[in-house]
Length: 389
Image 1 (cartoon, rainbow, N blue to C red):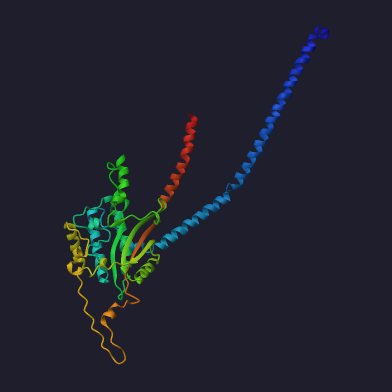
Image 2: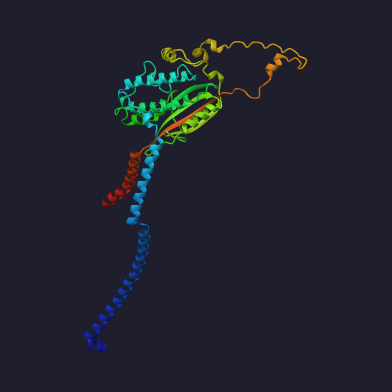
């Protein structure tokens, strides 16, 4: 203490220097530990950077990718053109964009189909309207003008398929067309803006399946090739009867790939003889039958109403005479001969074929991709907005 009192300035200076030295040592230790953690973080970031840099395409890779995309687009254009060789023959311009004029065109097509089928010996139901009864029946309401183009396009494709189906008739075997159904188009279900506002729009969408009638159907999602934004389709269902060779010829004609027709499902079952038409139908008589069916309140669901009472009462089969006995062969009882079951019969099968006409939607694919990008960007924008708040 005597030295401290004698030299206070010296000792105070030494004490301050010791305090500064201890603080410097502690600060150096702190900086060293922080530097170590930063160095480790830097090593990890550099490793990530090298990984990303190795995956990042170079200018050459980008050019190669663009060239590959261009080749794929050219290939797609070639395939579409090659698979739609008959498009010029299939699609015709509608005579007008008015719904009532389309009705007259559809009636002309239905009359032509009935006439072509009758000319080839194909049996049709008297009220066969090939899926367009909604518009060709007497007193029917015409479609909306906005749906004219879509309905006419659907009718053109059906006209092309009907031509292939009619060509399957052979002179040796009978052929019956029991029903032709088309898928109800979205344009036919669209309502006005006032009708589709608010809750009415949801009810309209839910009722779309209820609008399906006997002339129209809805293709199951499990078998359709439709993909929103990429592929658009027009679906048809054909129910016809005949021998197996009729179905085989029909499928062979569809595999010509002159149009983008895809068979989505095939059903086969024994035909019910009571459901088969018994005589050819004159197109004029068929039109009169359709008018009578539309104005009559009586149901037309059985053979008596459609073909008359004569169709329901077949003539009695003549009794076969007994075969006389000969020295070479004994007598054969006619009743026993009639009871013998033949090994092979003239079986008529009923075929149900669902067909789709496929179209590639290029602009829709781009729009779908853009929508996906916008959906992905939306959460990021929202996070930035929340961060600013």
